[in-house]
Length: 339
Ligand code: KG4
Ligand code: ZN
Image (cartoon, rainbow, N blue to C red; front, side, top):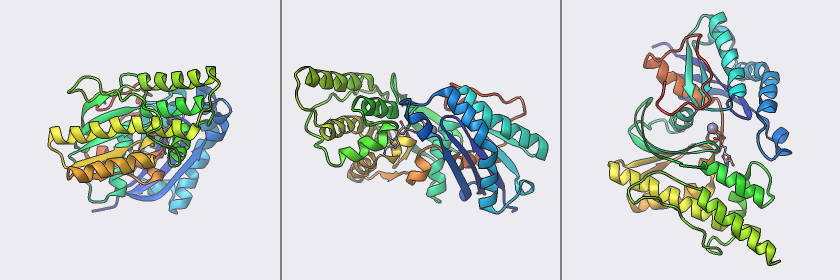
């Protein structure tokens, strides 16, 4: 069979990305131009600034992806692009470029759900991984526990009712003056802090629920910091970071393992920016061993936003005949499993 070469574009938040894949699972290039430094001074992503920077970067990033893969536009068979969820202005930049290329090159366009992309990152890393499995997707914007029944076939078991896991990391990091993005900073400090120093609440919600809630934990940490300040007592930042992280991880790990056991799966797969968290990888792997459940996660470069993961998801959609037309629009609040 002829190789299928996919060009993928991702611009849903603060990273301008393009990648080229062979047959969905082999990366020929994966270019990420991050805007983190630009947004740092604002303590988070400023949507208008992000859109403008995407416009400046997009053509260069696509060209770099082609150059690195030593290919040209005529070698591309399919174009995959994130059309949601994300910031509308940011999404539109990648989407418009993808539509223009699809039209000019007369090749199929595949609109990809960003969250599906995060899941697909695992197919690139683990060549023999096949559905079904349970996937915990934890990023700056999403926290989902999902049954992946087939390629592009999902059933949501639970999701966050308030903050996303990464959002909680970022907010607590801000309160601790650690800067943006907070996840990696809290992860690093947690390695030297005492995770048992402060007993922050673990929010499990109803007995049989696979939903999450992090706002109560966030308030508990903020209250703790305020009361320490009022009393003029010392705050041990690494202990706060470690105790907060442990409270998040306990719930994420327990619910993921429980989901696999209840649904009868022997695999739990991690995805999204927070899947880069070393404590989460370790804790989930340990607990997996205890219950004979295989734990898989992507390498760090494929955890946070990138276009290779979008290209992989686009490839399977393409094989399943899920091709978009040029009326495809950005859907900022696109849900998982919605087309
Ligand atoms: O997947 P991603 O790049 O963007 C979204 O789709 O949201 O995830 C970014 C999120 C941020 O909230 C960041 O703080 C978090 O992932 N993150 C981490 C780590 N690395 C990134 N959170 C915890 N530990 C990490 N090592
Ligand atoms: Zn993401």
